[in-house]
Length: 376
Ligand code: SF4
Image (cartoon, rainbow, N blue to C red; front, side, top):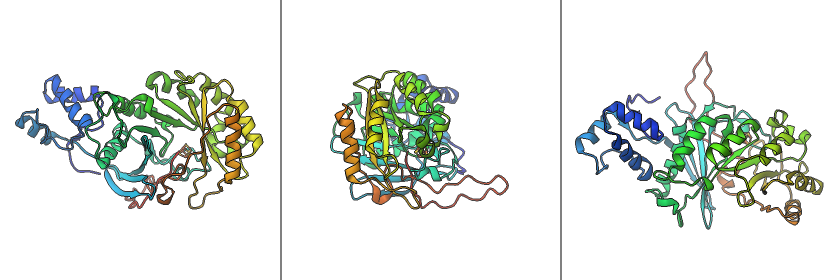
């Protein structure tokens, strides 16, 4: 815990920042100026805010901070992928991963410390849920990445060509739809065109299939949707993604059919991890084609990324190619995702931090994290 009594302004939404400034006795335009400095310029201290009077900057610094979580570890893969382990004020930690590609750069953001869902192919699923991240902690992951990539100020008018951070996927640790309010508040800050300015078209929220929340994502946030499918029958999906027992495939696909804003130009992504001898047969590829009928869909085939103690193996290259060909032949885009950052356990499904939930009777100190994350 921090013993700094000052309030951190980073992570406050527009309304909260305006209210905070009103309570501080500042005029309304001050909140707008601060918004610009915090989210457009990435300011980490008040002293450099050149259009604010010196005395006002000093008063702000007495009452507030412009914080960042501590970067406990920063790893770089041989393929350019970077992974940051971030520690928040209460000592809990999550991982955030940046994946550079030729024409874009994607930041994989976490929404929870640990996860409740125990998907059998996912390293995060072996870490019990410690807690939800607050909106400021979700926003902070983007702030830290922009700091590390040297990409302040934020792009103006969404013109992000040539930048290293252009896209965001909520596919890190946790199920974002089990922390919807904080995720939504964070994304509203992230999408604000006068702030971090990441367009909703460049943000993808990935869910294991929390059916009752899916329509809200489309209607309220309008971001792209990805669904962790991984199996074509309920019996197998019950094992791979235990949430399926609550929301089986039929209900999940109905929610996808009804997803607001999906179209052939904005397709829903179905994630399908390739597990040797488990879900990778030609018959399963054909069944997937049948299931997706009527949904504007694309399929991401993810070669399984191993982690210590994992109960699965990756499908053979031949099985993955054959699976992909069946989907392509049926008219679906079905690229095989190139594993990224495997050497630093930053690839899909490998994230995990060493945060644990403190016991109530014996609030043990949080163990030092030497962590690695796992991703949805
Ligand atoms: S795949 Fe996603 S939802 Fe499933 S255990 Fe991993 S982090 Fe949780």
